[in-house]
Length: 278
Image (cartoon, rainbow, N blue to C red; front, side, top):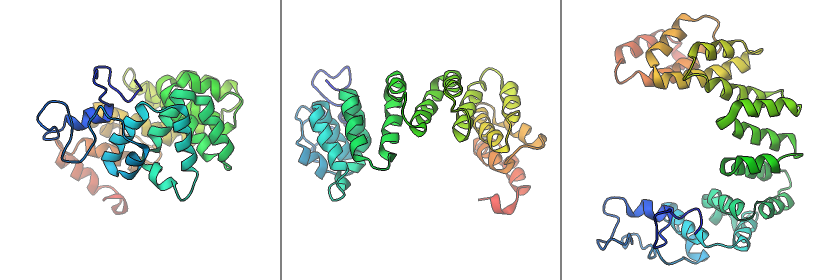
């Protein structure tokens, strides 16, 4: 079974089919999860590619999930080829992420070789590496070694979501430690400190060398801090001086306060520049 099947699905029901059949009124009453109202196929039956591509919206995702569960790498590569055909690409783009994922799981080398051969500007290649990093970060790290700066930095930024310290160490060791990528990875590193030591995270963010890096890191810290303690976050913003882009940061804290502290939000909004109040 492919990754789109749930581990508890002995009958072959796919991940998206399971989600669909669990909705109120979606079943047909016999317990097998078939959805007569929307005209979907029985969950055990694999749709043809033509059926999957002809569908639209959520139904297309359900049918494509079933198709991809049993797809061979050649079938996935054919879909990737179709995505480069301007006339045919419209049908596959809504489910492109699913196709990419399945291809990377089946044969990442084949997927990357095809995209590299067809993608003249390199945008799709960078994107597929970023997607690969969300599926298998260790494989993506190995596969991106020796690749372009854009590809490698994209993978390291993805790594920073789970291990910012390692991402920053690799960035520096490989001489990539400048520019916006470093700022984004450092922001992720500082964000990871919020739960254990907010003050250390704030100090680290404010100590970054440029206003741009400070702003990026503070945005990560403040938005995360506001989820746990919006009142204290707001108090720090109001009392602190020389905070870059303070108005933008306030705009991300205030929604966390609206339900229980509407009067306080109104007070803060009244003191903000009119152009920033929406």
